[in-house]
Length: 472
Image 1 (spheres, rainbow, N blue to C red):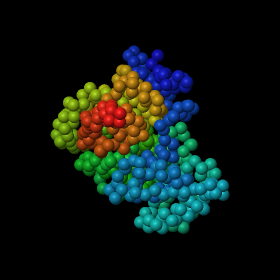
Image 2: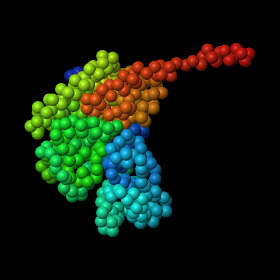
Image 3: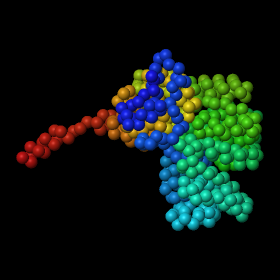
Image 4: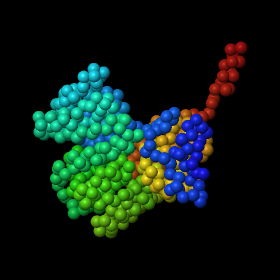
């Protein structure tokens, strides 16, 4: 039976349904880990909340938008400055956080007046910014504050501003995935189609599910410009509020992160007839395949092949240098959701790395279908993994390096296992050809960093003995 109950889970036997070991002769579709389900009582989850999925992952990336969090200040602080989403306007989105700073008295008597006051204060303090997202949080959703009515009132009094409300408190779903869905559907239903873009190319697309982590969007945009493709909207890396309102005019929706943003691509197809094309943008083989698929849609295959050849000439020798030194390395990937299936084949094929364990915080069944199909026999696949499970899996598979977020990264560093930040990157960007060389470089530097071995060496023994002898 390929489902696995770890020793640390003996008192929570239900966890067996969430952990799968891929073995020969089994149809993995019959043994997918239970996912997108409530965290089991007794296990300490690494997940984020639904509000975090809306604000931190998608909305907060926009470069020209005030992000007003209607709730206690902690909700704003916890989702501020924790992801590396740069922009070409001086990183406005990373510098500021806005909150209505709800206190106990406001919860008792209602916070709508406080929200209205906070919205007006924010626009007054930043007169050049005319766009805003307003998010509900757990307490303001529980007391029933009507944020849409407040936003409508402010917009009627300030006709030059536009406000989008996202009612997705932390408790709305089992993980941050719910926040992705709520923001996607709310945006297309309320804002898409309200602005007409200026068309400058005969080839237009939306690039969906890329958040410009350390410049991913800006690197990939160089490819689209060389190909002569106009990106109507970046959802939402280095993107603008009004560009996202014009998504209905693109000829194609290209989806990178299907879990965070596939919903809006589906709705664009349903409501506006815009076809959806899914790609992978990490890894040389995947990036080349993505460019070929996009160019085939527009009938510009020659341009695509020329671009791929140029990028391979510049970057493939450098990648090969790292591949020679990383071949056979055992890697665990513990990230959010889609990156498991985006990365597993790319690091194995392009770097010669062996992926031995994967854990997803908020992946759905289709994410596990993809990653298990791409993964190899003997690999563990975990839904909503916890700290003790991570420790036990490390003992079972003994990875040489772990791709994960900084929260789990701090744990594995104490075990003197190198890690690379799979959420915000170490020194990105990681997408595209140049980006994957950056990923290979950071993997190599982590693996061969002598400090890890030095940190694992206890030098106190002889020193302590000398001090004891001296004391005697």
